[in-house]
Length: 340
Image (cartoon, rainbow, N blue to C red; front, side, top):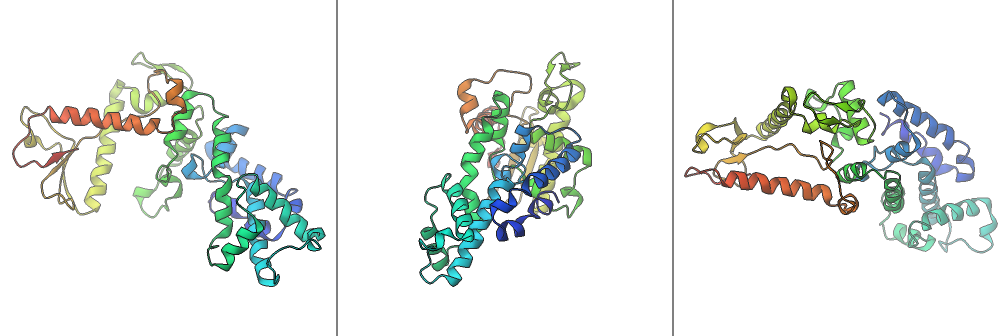
């Protein structure tokens, strides 16, 4: 509701009113948006984390949008579409440049050009003329996304924050924030959702302390998410993920069995054995491993890894290789096609 309803309430005004008017409305509106977010997480959201929340979900944010920049993109898109309809030469003449409407348009256009100098009046009207301007406001909003994300990342010097935010830089990493709660599978308890949002904003969630397993517990709680073996925490997390994968595969029409014992000799077992998977005539063994690009027990992150946007992918690849190496050491029974 915050992302798709409240955060979009200004769109009509932004498309019809120039920024010189909107600049008096946006600060109060933005503060309201921030207050709602703080109500969700039940904690103060500082300036840096609020800026992070305004990034696109695929850019590690919460998709709450920067209303200031959106105002320029919305007005330029609307004005360009309007001008194409009534200006024969499809351009603002020198005589027209002194008109208030033209001044507002050119000022907002200059803001967008500071992010992407290929955005010109001519290029916009050419797009409209050639039918390439579908969702023009959205296209213009993409121009400031890369720079905006780099600016926000610089606000978080902690190496753990850097690798965490890089792991969220993916179109599939924020499905929970966009999923319509049509079934129980797509719903989350308020507390769980709150912790998830805090997690994405790299907020402190627990007091720093020493766990019963003698390991240091970080304030963001990564230790208890995947590093703690006390009380079966790590095992339970593993089992819950495996159970969810099983449910998804069963929804897809596959026959799935848990820890099928006769697939390997020596008492070895995979977590799931899948039959009926399209393109695989033989059973597929799946083995689950819980991992994180942020070390769960406080291990150091090098400067090279911190600045590497692909570091989360490399962590996953290394875990996949370790799992495959472990599986290949297990004696295989005849008829087993492959292991994953």
